[in-house]
Image (cartoon, rainbow, N blue to C red; front, side, top):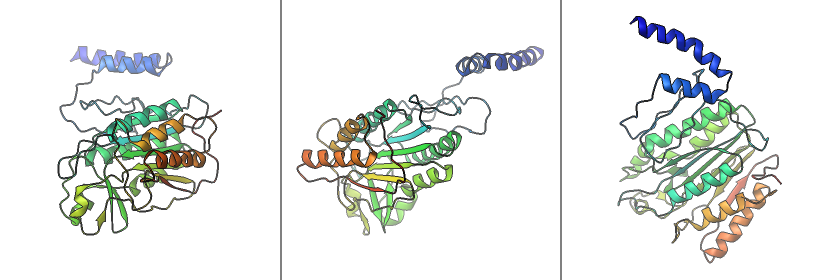
Length: 308
C-alpha cells in the first residue's frame, strides 16, 4: 500500500513536468502508468470531455477511429478548426439488403477530408448505439473547438423517410413495421442539432443514403428517397440524389457520387456550391442521367475545402 501511494505521488509530480515537453510525452507517460485494458465489447464509449487530461480511447472494433485527445484541434493550413464525422454502413442483414460500397465510400471521403485539414472520426458498420454516440461526440468535439469551427457530417448507407422525417438506418436495425422506425433508426436532423448546439458555423451535411432498400415495401408511409431537410442559417446540405429519388450503390469499389465528391474535394479554390455543381454534372454523366445529386445552401460566407 505504501509503495502504491509513493507511485501516485511520484506520478503527480512527473506528469505536470512532462507536460512542458509536449502533450504527446505526457500522454505516453499516462499510458505507461495506467495501461489501457482492451475492451471486450464491440461498442464504442464516448470520451468524457470534462476531463482536464487527454482521453485515451480504446475499442476492439477495427473500423472505429476515435480522437485521442480533448485538445482543441487546429487546421494544418491555418484555418479555424474543421471537425468531421464520417459514417459508412454496408453489412446489413438480408431483410434490409447489404450494400457493396458505403464502407469503402466512407474511408475514401474520410481520407479526402483529412487531406484538406479536417479532424476526422471514421465509423464503419455501426449499430444504432454506436451511431448515436458518434453523433454526440461530434457535438462534443465541436464544443471543444469553439464557436466558428466548421462541422461536417457524411453518411453513406441505407436511409429512408417516413411522414416527412429522414432516418439513417443502422446496421442491425430490426424494422418490420412503420412504428419500429423511431425505435431502431437515427433521425438525420439530430446531426444538425448537435452542430447548432455547439455553435459550429458553417455546418455541412452530406447524405448518400438514398439506396434501394427492401424494407420500404413493408412500411406504408416510408420511402427510400430522402425528404428535403431545409438548411438552417449558414448551412449546406448535400444529397447523392434528388429528394424522393434513389441513388445507385455502384458496380465497383465506390459509388459514382463518392468518387466524384472526393475528386472535387481536392480541387483548389472552389466554393462549395461550385464544387457540388461539378459533382452533380459528373454523376449525371456517369449514371446516364439516372441519378442527380441535390443540394440546399444557406451559407452567408464562401466556404472552400482546399485553399489555393
